[in-house]
Length: 157
Image (tube, rainbow, N blue to C red):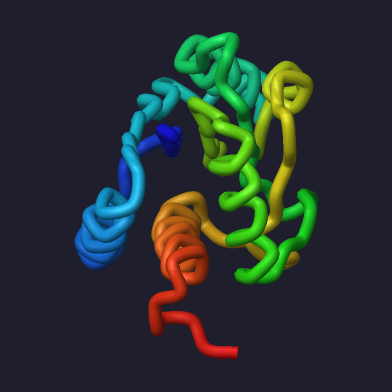
């Protein structure tokens, strides 16, 4: 299974980028893992949040293939524990899902068109995190999921 993470914008924090890279390398031991960066929208000063979401949404949708199984990371999504998330990943592996794509939106979330395209909306927490922090939190949880699936001593109950 190929897992892709689509991220809006790059991080300004070197420590986030370093930790994210570390977990990305660890994930690649288990599966094909790609990262696609969507460029930040330019000249947003005179744009409403809705216009920004729609422009980002167009970029996100153009990065998707029709066969992708798409999961949006959004605080209003379904709550899963780390064990449940590992079960979700395991289920996708068993179902021979070819392409699983997780998407981190920008500061204002996703456009309605992106929500319509999604197969699932998943929450990492009921709290709101910066989209820069979410990439690191998600990468750690994906790595954790693979260690749980493989019975490795990373996750403790």
